[in-house]
Amino acid sequence: MTPQEQRAVDWALERENSWKVDSLPNEGLSEEEKAFKAAIKGLKQRIKDFHLARQNNCCCYCSLRFQNRTIEQDREHIIPKNKHPELTFSVENLAVACKTCNMSVKKAKTSHLRGFRHGGLRNLNWIGDPCNYNIPHPNVHNWLDHLEYEFRQVGRDAVCHYSAKSTRGRFAYYFFKLDELEIFSNTDGQRGELRSQPLHPTLVELRDAYKQ
View 1 (cartoon, rainbow, N blue to C red):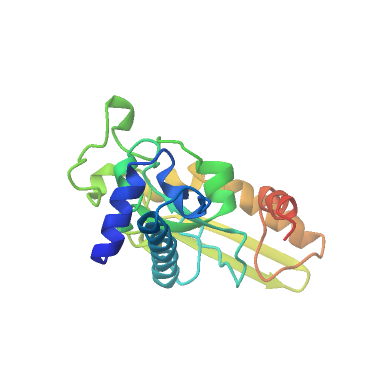
View 2 (view 1 turned 120 degrees about the vertical axis):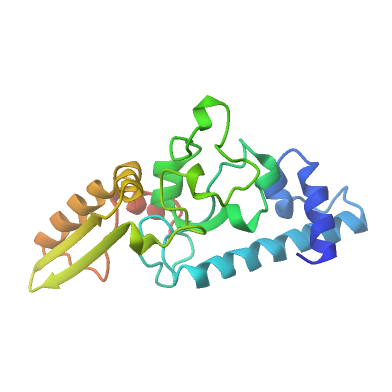
């Protein structure tokens, strides 16, 4: 972060909803606060662009491509920001997820974090410690070391299949309901409604709700 961005983050963390300060109305804000607001907006976009590039424009959890769609992308806090507000703007704690994985499945759950129900992370002093996570962490692990994904179209038949290659991969498979994604996309393909990639039914609902 630049010094200005760090000051803006410090300012944001003092407010009730620090992640949303860039949407505050300008009325009632000082010139300095307006500058902080602009800095936060730019920082959030820069972090998102950074993670999209690292993730090859794929969801950090299910690995499906975004394909130039924006409404289906969420800035994702691996450790929920309501549990550890100080990590709200931490690059290491952020990634980009599809709305199915983030809003419909993960939400503010903590079962993907090891030791959290017993008082906190196993190693809070280093959030990059692999022992903190039951899932492949987007910024710590290589997703392909833990899961494989295959989507093929042969004639009118479609095959979507995930294979777990590790304990973390198996946890992620069930935690993010990838089995449901497989069933839906394969049934969709058998109907002849082939796509460049499968769409989870909940994702369709969210897309329609946002009218995009």
